[in-house]
Image 1: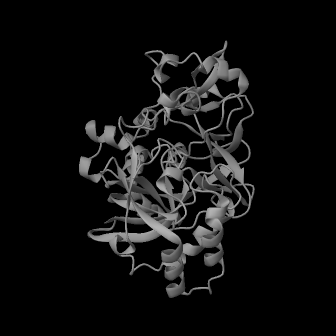
Image 2: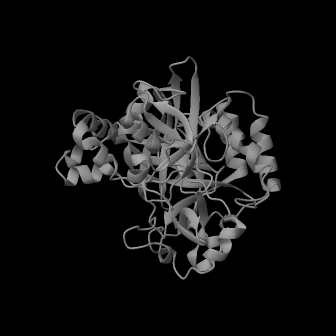
Length: 406
């Protein structure tokens, strides 16, 4: 899935350079375009709703989402930012869910309805958006470079600076850039083409070496995976930053170039074409300048951007500019395997991604293995979602990004 962007406050040495900004684009030359800002006018507008308005609410086994909610509760009860409410707003809802008898569907539904108020999420009144899927990939690798293991996964470079411009000017809220500081100025970081050509070679950033460049490319999109090591054992890797360049879906360009049929663009068809056309594969992958950096994980995983272990079919990646982590979300979209049916279920906003942009946009985590890969690969569903806020929290309390309104 998507790439997993992280946003950190700029170091003090960078702040002075950023104060020279008049627009986000002023730091970039014409040859080095900046990452895109959110769509002009995009704004999360929340409309109050009733549970009777949620399609399929009575049909889902909502109790199966309770473990995901409780994992996020651990974070919400310790947060100090006030985003999506304060710990006291979450005390009673989380306590009620924690004390449920295991597997009791009726009591889980009653607790959710008592403690959470549904709000229909729209983009300035438009409730429909795109929903895709992602999974935890399995790859082959080695701790050292040798033989067929020649494709590096890099750790996050120490000179990579990721900046939320809204921290410096209200007029730039929701706009983000990344780069490195050179001569007191923030410059664009290397793109995929330059990194693949060796821009980071010799810097000691190699986390692990893979045996397949196509696998590595899709790992950048998915954001997390398991690497089975030649030496024995495995290592879980997860997103730890991105180079600041815009995520470009290469399938769209491949269709425009006649490499793929426009109606048959899926992860599987893209992968098959790249494997069958090795002479063109590298240049085609370089059409996506976004590049992801990784870290090793220990314990349960994969971890989402909220810092909790994801649960297949219940964890959702969202645009954190608009939707705070930890919120239960009622999803209603076309079923990716049968367009005449609906996929309606309770999920939790626990992750994000570079391709996940906009107030009504999501990425469903399907888990690990071939079935999860297949589900993720075909999912391009239209639909929307409702945010479930603790009843003591109003839309005005959501401070994730360009403020929501009701």
